[in-house]
Length: 84
Image 1: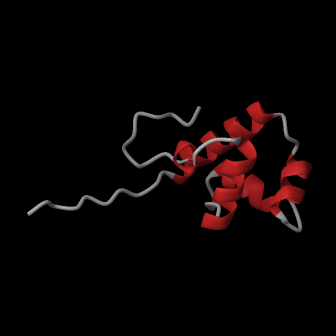
Image 2 (image 1 turned 45 degrees about the vertical axis):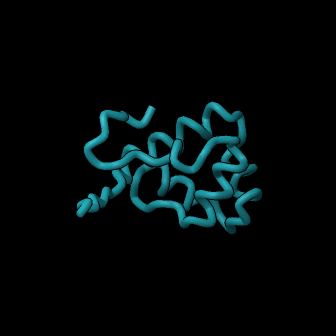
């Protein structure tokens, strides 16, 4: 029988990766805030700092806006990825 291994996400490195993708996209924080239907920009800054993670809905919308797969915005714990 195959053993399942569950991986958790590194919130800080994921935040850095989201920040880099946003920066490369050329969208402003205000534009993203409006596209995501957020009432203020604070959630974006919390994601960038790794304080919180975007909901599945917001992660999906971000991936569509930034034209990347959702998995490309996530960094699993123990990964060699440094978030950039």
